[in-house]
Length: 280
Image (tube, rainbow, N blue to C red; front, side, top):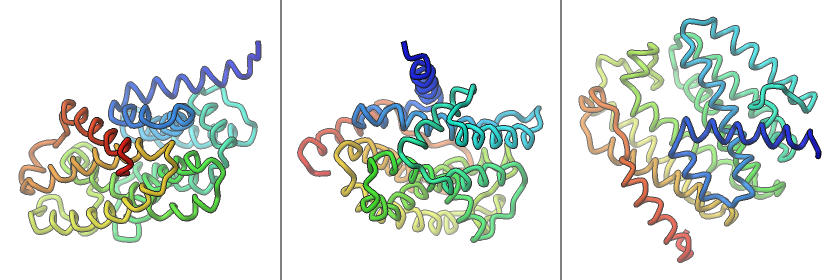
């Protein structure tokens, strides 16, 4: 028995478990990808989820020290090709196999560091944070989807960034109350939580809609192995965005908008039929 392969396979299974426990929506999207893409994408999600947990969850601990240690272990794993942390071992294996750019990892960990302190998110820092926290995650997945086709990756780089940005901004808008009340954050530049109103909300929504529109053209150019899964994530977030857009600002501050499970199932079925009919 190849025990090194067994260790790596077990580590990848751990990332799959983490994904299933933390995000039913993301798990559903991954399952609609080609089977060969499942474990690599789980590995990316596991890495991102663990870092995010450090900055958002462990308030009774020294989060800066925890994140610094996580960063150190990440780079050691990337250099050595081994980590006894199964999440990092799975991630480094996928980074090596698919040539995921080190710059994406650097940018992601930098955005996690920004979450350790209260920030005044002026436009440049806002764009920097979104790039590192969301856009590069899409770019990591795009490396996997493109299977070594650098020309395709470069052609789809910008749409992938715009899709990641749309997802993150929808999350910011949906979670504006909890981000402020639980973490003291307002990510949107120039937005004062106490003065958040319908006019401000419409400006944010126009920016998000432009990101969704730019991303769609890229989805249509993805390899068939990845297209349905990414499209499903797109329609899910678009549905969430439309629900938010229909509500006044006061409602957004008073409740967390979600897409019911039965609606998610309908979105899956509709996406599948569009895919089978070559509409996407």
